[in-house]
Image (cartoon, rainbow, N blue to C red):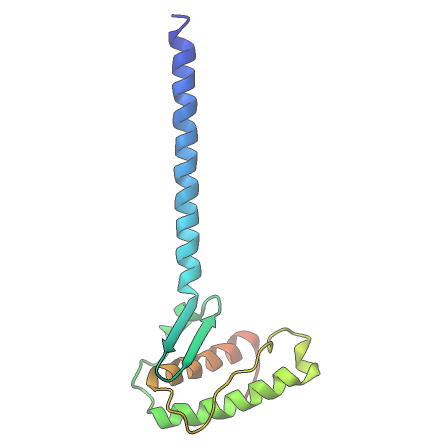
Length: 138
């Protein structure tokens, strides 16, 4: 009986530790999935462009917007060009840098066909940005 109780306690201790590790692993896995849902990357090596949107809540917001194909590409390009120009102006303007919203310029050049997907996501990112941070780029 003296050997059974310590052995039983040791077994319970091992089981308890194993359960905690499994829970931690599940938590880490869930956390990494959540982070990946808030990061959106689209790249095209032939055109040498890449768009990465790292913004909490953007993915869930995007599904509430008009679907792909709702706007024609030319409308998206025109809106994006104007929004990018204003955004980049604010990156360089010290009045806007205090908020840390405008940290890096966006390289979006007229005359380059970035494709529908990039234009659609960039357009919607600016809509999300304006709505979330109460900013007007237009």
